[in-house]
Length: 343
Image 1 (cartoon, rainbow, N blue to C red):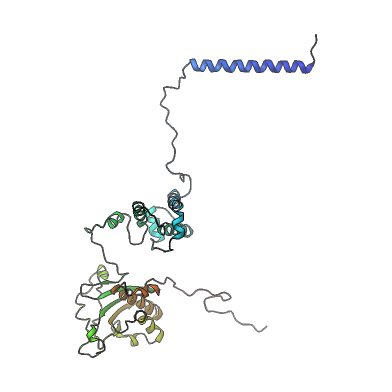
Image 2 (cartoon, rainbow, N blue to C red):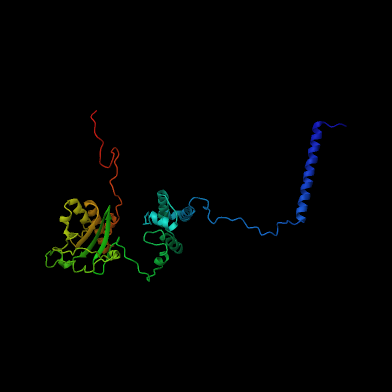
């Protein structure tokens, strides 16, 4: 009998599939019985990167962001209920030096936002909360990368240098602080007026800060202790303010500048309770007056932190970083206007 063409094609395909199946079974049996010549070779395993961000442009930065995000996600409920508090973190240059990478401003802002979120978490587990705070301290302003554990452990063997950016008391009993504004830098010394002497502003019972400032500055490191090579102040009344050895009204003829200097005393209602001596240099009259204001505010705040919280709430302790007046819309510069044309 003769088969049609379609039937012959089907038979040939079945035979081919059977041959392929038989050859596959034979190859499997042979490979099981024979040993591979590469079995005894010490083949090095494939290397895997330690970090998931290994192939990204800045793996250290992305690992840090991922670690902070994991902490926030694991305590997301406490973040919603927590109070928003912004901490003081290290600057962009300090973070770059610590991580040994270059960051853009947007990346630095995103990092600070993540740090603020982690800092605002209310973690119930005390041990975990302590660990998280210890981890955050390496990014806080005022902590060095190697001092974190020593500071939080409360070790007192290492002497800490006083910072002139915050008010502190000198060994002569004066309250000292520094301030900045634009190109001006100011240093303030506050001498409390005795309660029994208030209201008796005579030259005989006036305090003399010249007797208290016997030590002079010989090197820049002594600035933190409140010692500067300054003219000897001679107060003739109680509660007097001297700027570079001159009365406040003589050094700052403008009323607005004088009001800026004494504003911290008005905030806490302590006007006339301190003899003040200021050393200021650099900048113009506005920058110098506002630098003096910050120095006075920091020194006054340090005298009694609990009662002088109004100074912090008024924003007098923070440095105003604005250097120039901003450009206005519709004007070529901050105040300059375009020439008016009639037609």
